Image 1 (spheres, helix red, strand yellow):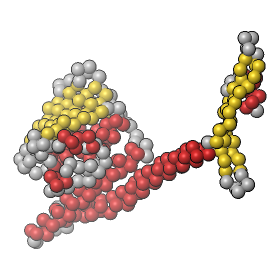
Image 2 (cartoon, helix red, strand yellow):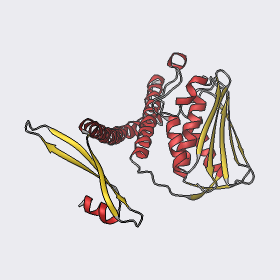
Image 3 (cartoon, one colour):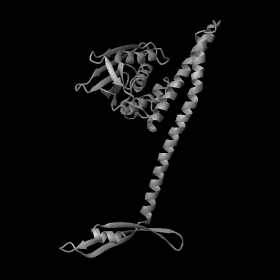
Image 4 (spheres, helix red, strand yellow):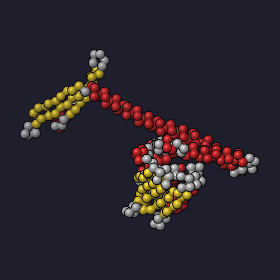
Amino acid sequence: KQVETCVNELKPYTVIHRIICNDDSIKVVEERGEVFCDADNKPIRMDGTVQDVTKSWHKENELRLATEQAILANRTKSQFLSTMSHELRTPLNAIIGMSSLIEDETLGPLNEYDYKSYITDIKNSGHVLLNHINNMLDITDVELDIVDINLERANSKELIESCVDLVSGSSVNHNVQFQVNISDSLDELETDTVLFRKILHNILSNAAKFSHYGGKVIVSLKKDESEKNILLSVEDLGIGIAEDELETIFEPFTQVDMEFTRKYDGAGLGLSVVKRFTEALGGNVDLISKVNSGTTVNVCLPISA
C-alpha cells in the first residue's frame, strides 16, 4: 500500500517490518523508498533501501518504556502524598482543636502552670506539622494539575495584614516587627485570595523564621512601571542565603546549608509552593539574598490574578 501511495502521490515512504526468525528472535528492518520522475513529472524509476534497525528500535522502545514508567511513578508518588497528607491532617485538626480548648480553660481553670505551657507547646507543634502537610498538599495539587483559579475583589490592606497577623502570632516568629507599605493606587486587588494568602504566608514565615531576634520584615505592594502588574516584595535582614544555593532554592525539599541553619525547622517546601502558585496565577518570582545581610523575595503578578 505504501509503495502504491508513493507511486501515485510521488511521496517518499518509510515502513518498519518486524521479522520473526527461526530461533524466535525478532529482527526489525526499515524500508525506505522514493520515486524519481522525468521532465514531465512521470515516474520512471523507484529507488530504496532496507536497513537492519533492530538495535536502535529496541533502544527507542526501552527509552519510551522508561519514560512511561517514570511518569507513572511520579503520578503514583503524588497521589500517595496527597492521600497520606489528608490522612494526617484529620487527626491533627482534632489535636489542635482539643489543645486550644484546654489552653483557653473552656471547662475550667488549669491548676498547674506547667500543664498550660505543655498544651501550648502541643498546639504550636501541631500547627507547624499541619503547615508542612498543607505545603505537601499544595505541591501535589500543582503536580496533579488540580489547582482551581477563582478571581475575586479583595481589600489589599486587609488581605496582607491578615497574613502578617497570622505569622506574627505563630511559633516561627521571635519578636520580629512587620512593616506594611501599600501603594495608594492599590486599595483593592483582583486575585485568587486563597492562593495569594498561601504565597504571602509562606514568604512571611520564611522571613520571620530566618530573621534575627527582634528583627524587621518589610512588606511592600505596588504597581510596576507598565501598571499591568502588581509587585509584592518581602524584605528581611536575617541570615541570608549563599550565592551558590540560590539556583535550587525554589526546588521542593530544599533548604539552605543544614550545617548553617540546623537550628531552623522546615521541610524546604515553602518557596517551592510560592513559585508554583505564582506561576499558576500567571506571574513570576525572584529572590535576592546575601549571607548575613538578609533576603528579598519579589513576586510579580498580573493586575488581575
